[in-house]
Image: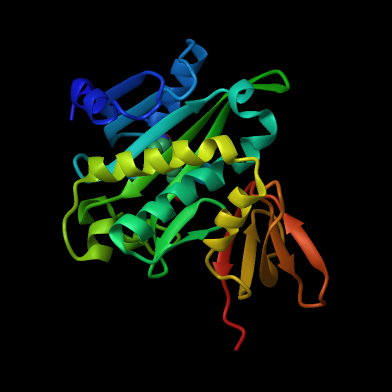
Length: 262
Ligand code: BTN
């Protein structure tokens, strides 16, 4: 891949500018730098390899050369409406989930808030970050990392949740750039309706562990156990606690796990 090939591959998508790197610290970091320097809405940063890819909660995200997808889209709040910002993580996860289900015949699901799973194993992570100016967000960056080939799957000892990749789940190799294009196509087609109920229903309809008992793990707090009911309109998770009370949880630093309560 190179910039010219990327621009020609994505020429029929309504993107802003594009940047391609063989090696980069992090596409999110580069997208934030570029956004600060004035990159237009829907500009895209793509890297073949990341040396400092990052995940939620300050974790590292593994993107070795030639095996994964790592890309970040710059979004301007004035173009999408600032109330839609809390839904961006869902948009990224939903786009990957829908493409894997429809185009690759995998049974992918979203582990709220930002992971895509196949067969109970994670193959995608989404990280939304913002460029703040005082109390305002000047731009948001929606970063997506997809494990495509087996080399992109980190060793079991280095992950907090079991991982896999698209090719292992499928049992055959794929063209990763076609996958990226399909994800971007779905993401861009859903973006104008991100504030609608239909978007929330699609996001909710693809959640893993629905009606099942889950555990929310939070740094410095006791874990919360509850039955997963769905989402609130801002994308917070609705849980029914064992005493029947309904509670909402914002993504923040929360991590979700399934629990066995047979
Ligand atoms: C997570 O699961 O914790 C989120 C992982 C997000 C990884 C992607 S790869 C592209 C973009 N650049 C980064 O540094 N992170 C995101």
